[in-house]
Length: 234
Image 1 (cartoon, rainbow, N blue to C red):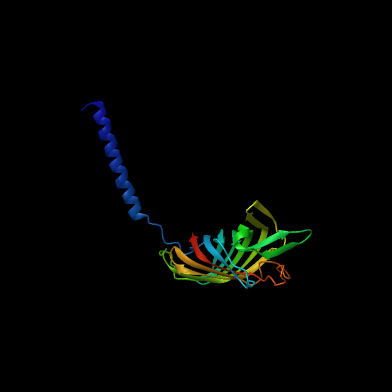
Image 2: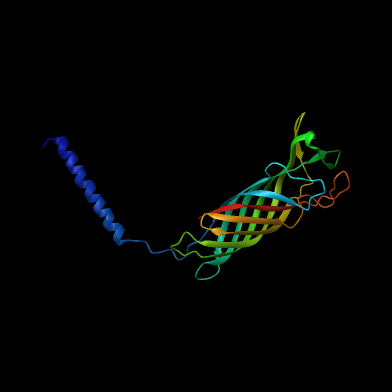
């Protein structure tokens, strides 16, 4: 046997010995289940923003989308750990496309309904910090990662950036819209099984500040109903 074959044989023996030792260690030192496990501490969601309480001629266009992501502290309230609270912080971007144009005037913002031929796109866009509070029920155990969940609660949002954007025939324009309500709050419900979960959010206060009207005098009391999916990650 030459040196090359001897080295190959020695390496093979050492490798087989390593595998045998690894299997022995694995079979005799299994970690016990973590009975203090936590669930669903990170989330990401995609959704559609539906505007309610619309003026007569108001209509939505394009895809009024929502993207949210964040961290939730899971706080079990019973020994089985299938009932508890979730307190979190997150970030959300929301767009609301419609046939309404915001006009940046001298010291005030005006609103009017556009004809189809007058514009390409018009939208509100918001970026917000979110603070969800959930009451959580689930069928999870320390060994089961596929389970049913029903999470209901409320969400408070602080809009740190709110803009109106328009794409007209003559070009694009946009401005920071101070009429967009900075503090928004509503009720939410998330439920589903394993990866796929349905998300609902209903805004309790209007998207715009109180007293805002179209140029026709009709009040603007738009509220948000959000429907989508939400994914939880440990």
